[in-house]
Length: 79
Ligand SMILES: [Zn+2]
Image 1 (cartoon, helix red, strand yellow):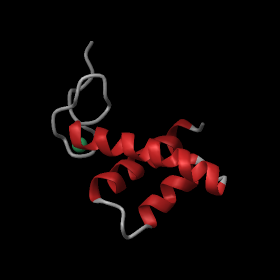
Image 2: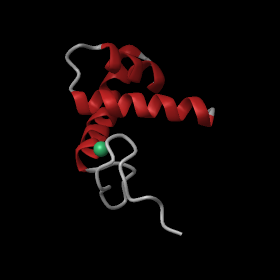
Image 3: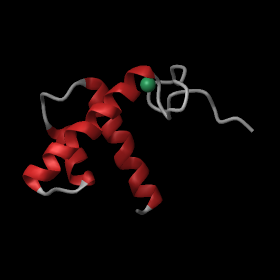
């Protein structure tokens, strides 16, 4: 059975091989890239990093929405 073909954040159509639509997938990839620098510089966990992204006033809307979604997922999955 096929998964629902919608972005869980905005309800737009999903990109192929992505949990998100094009805009949110792009923001997600940027978050992952940026985290590599943060991790080296600050030794923070993925979760702490996401929290900071959300709290940062300079974070774009797409990135903030993705960060929130990722935090929610981690809460329920219990990594
Ligand atoms: Zn989206």
